Image 1 (cartoon, rainbow, N blue to C red):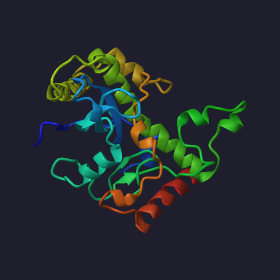
Image 2 (cartoon, rainbow, N blue to C red; image 1 turned 180 degrees about the vertical axis):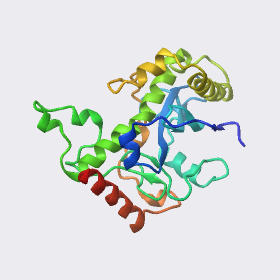
Image 3 (cartoon, one colour; image 1 turned 90 degrees about the horizontal axis):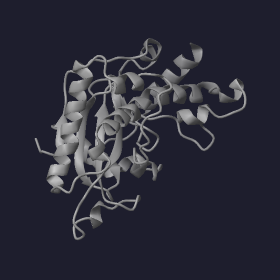
Image 4 (cartoon, rainbow, N blue to C red; image 1 turned 135 degrees about the vertical axis):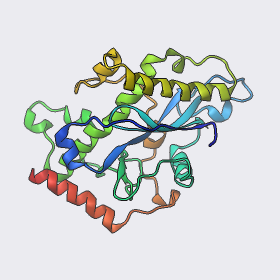
Length: 263
């Protein structure tokens, strides 16, 4: 296993009971994030992305206990996370791909395909939780129809990845102001802090940061870089990865949406 990969095992699931009934085969959420990098002037150019400063681009998977189950660090900040996702799919020995009918939740920038459940997309279709909190009346804020009801549940559950990133980055100030180490060491810092994050989650039942993040109204540490390299291009073609959406998987999408609407 390469040093810039990290897989974790043994996390238990904590989940709102009602949501679990509807998304019972979901095993986690996947997204990308950035951590600031410190490099010499001659090395930093490929690490400078759309934010205008050098970063590591990181693909991560989390479970519903706010633990990291996979991370791939050290990618240059300018690299589109769709490429990282595609490379991960092509390396099944390292990437924990869902088996059978299991799947990860992904946001609208990723392709909807077997193993990766994306929300419904559309110019007038709401998805992010903040969109459902706007409106002068409760009726305006409520999700409308089966598509928005599905998206609201999807977003509520996928929010676990933003909560996890928030707790992780808030705890480790060096992730916001990385010391001037060799880039390999900076990568190792990212992976080591993720491992310690998991240890704290499993062993410290009274940790204040995790307790705060379990609150439904918790607002994660402001992380403008979570998934932004992917959301900058919401029309990613599934041809960029090795698998394609299929009718069976789209049917599952619709089946879950119908069940939610009938509940």
